[in-house]
Image (cartoon, rainbow, N blue to C red; front, side, top):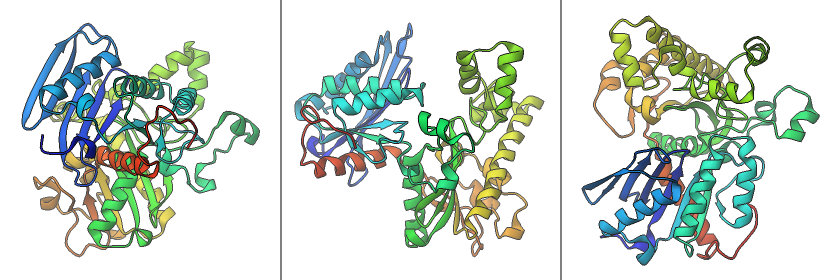
Length: 414
């Protein structure tokens, strides 16, 4: 183990049946170890752990998140990173919904965990899993400061007109109904990387960012601050996604309740699990979607066309909203790896100064890069996101501000 353990941050992204993790240096970004726990609670789970050029795998029952994390800690020890013995500087947890309460990285305490749990009504698929990961890690590393980094934080300061829904104001206030936005850690990180790549001051840079993964969102960033974003009260609004359909007429929900007899849970499953690309084509992996398109599958082609149509609709809206755009950027799994999506999303926009260079767009490069022609009026970029690094840096900063105190004795909010 070349790095000092007390300089490293463990980043945990706990999902309903999975845990993604990285151990990394928040200053250099060097990753000491990483891995993925999958199929927690199922008959046969798995762990894949990578460290120092080695890959260790485990298959077998993983009854809960704590058991999964114990396996992970054992693998860390087997590869020379004994977290419990050597210690780490901090643990950073991705938390999806911070509501109105949390809008900056927050030292985790019992009160904070309780508040995150209460916010589960706004993110029923995400916050309970986030809490489970936090509680399990606190038990396994009781003396290590732990920090929550919220997906909604970057968009907390959206302009009033952008975050307000036009429903009864008293009802909205009573139930916390507003646009919160998600993927904020990624959008904020990429916005900073874009300004640096263009050698522009962030406060003088207007940009549109497309975070396209299984979940997908776009943002309009004006002078470093969010002006608008596609996701709303929940991650369901906005772009077409892997299993979520994005925007739809809310009257559809009333129709399904009355005509199909669907209750809230059934509608929740429909909108979160069985819509989007999957609902239209039967698959939610973009690589599989492309294979179906190449084979002549009409449903897959329609799913792709709907996906692109929604991207272009928001692109147009954000071009008008910002007035001047200094960059359009694609990031995350689909955004970074699908030249076809990038080209089709921006096709025919030459009159707006927006073009994609075919050779640059299809080049096998991995870092931040231009995909627009040299001298284009509006630079079009691909910039890899790195949410883990952003979370690690936020956690390290919070711990430094609190003098390195453990979460075991402190309570409070933000």
